[in-house]
Length: 573
Ligand code: ATP
Ligand code: MG
Image 1 (spheres, rainbow, N blue to C red):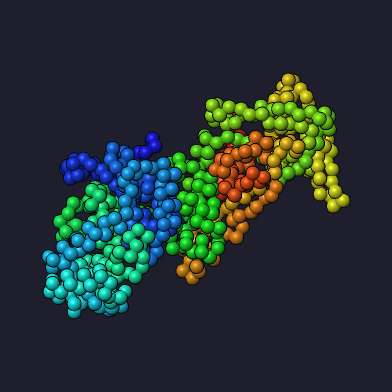
Image 2: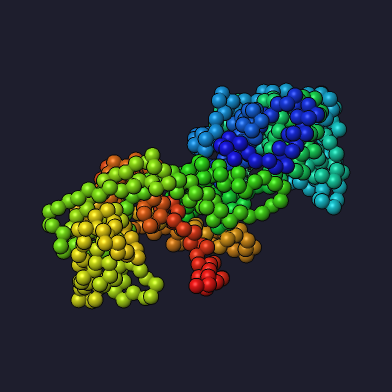
């Protein structure tokens, strides 16, 4: 797949059929229609990639349209965040940024038209009574006593609604369809309700606001959308979508439904994400543990990784849950290709190279990205006192531990072979530092006599290293499906160890002046991104993702033996 394209799926089949029958004169025009009542999440990314991707694939267009029909919940902050996120994902709507509220006048005219042809009426039943009259899945609804008022009376009352002469809940405008229809959506659905709220864009102009179902299809039609793609919950709304367009007699787009993305170990409903923010489980919408686009961005995700993921999971009609490690797989794939390596030590152990000159500093040449020769090299200072990772040393190593141990020689990456000669401890037996010697003949990391070592460690020069803070993130929830327990609220499954802060860590001086958003692989540790909380004096790194899939490791432990071992046995020698 190339960027901007979408793979084949049932929707491309539908579009191809339309093109063959010439339903839309070969046009493909989609839209992404967020409601500005929260931040976008990875599920929205699927819809964004699909809508913009299809338009690109067919040489068509995709609009960004805010579905801002409910002023009670919508805010400018969300509008700004959403536009930033769609752009960051790599999509461009040119001058086609629209708002459903742009069409309030036209929608009002369409409502009048439906009243005039006898297909809409003002109902003064209370909201509770309307609900009761609607009936159930097994029982037909009942007609409102106001259903058959004369057209002129409806026109006058609707005008009174618009003028603010009714209070919230006193009157609604309903479509006159069929109270006995098997599809409850067709039982005289509400088209307009009174809301006493100022709208972020239209201010106090309107006292009445169109319902989603009345606004959506007509907005699609006004914009000349050909394929109106939405999630499966709207399948039962399609007859209503079609009814409005047919009865108002305007251009008729095709609604198509697909299965929404669900992701393991997280929640994607905006209502729940808002709770995580408001109840303080996270630091905000862009907390790096949030599945929001802004959270993923702050975590260090790349737009490319998210787009590849969306392409990989495909588009279908079957509901399911995608494992989080699939998203992380695409993240690792892209980071591996694209980011520079640096050396950093998170849990430091001091190493003193006893035979290295006290004041000497050598610049070692390090490769920035072994996957990308154009990334070049950098100089890393080496000196007598270093830090290595505490985990890379064991005083009494078990059989398979190949890293540093007393009397053993290992390679320091890009530098020398060193041998551990002494272990210095405090009175409690805690290891304070190691004494080592180096072999000057191994500069660059190989021995002229051809002798080999079994492991290569990363390191930083103590004198040159910069102290920084590392924020190590883990899944926000402890279970795969936090919404799966009927008895317990999803917040019962919050992982309280999802953030651990390590301060200080030591990073190589190359990172001085790094910019927030800069992504790195800390060699042998994980991918990190410089957080916006960083200041001139203090770098803060977020751990984006570990180098290997921890989850798989756990599974392998419990499951089959590692493959390598079996192969060895099978090989006849
Ligand atoms: P609400 O429940 O408040 O309607 P929503 O998640 O549907 O929330 P919208 O802002 O209406 O939010 O969504 C914008 C678009 O993104 C819609 O077309 C919707 O179908 C799509 N979308 C939302 N969530 C997902 C998801 N998990 N997977 C795929 N598409 C989604
Ligand atoms: Mg929605």
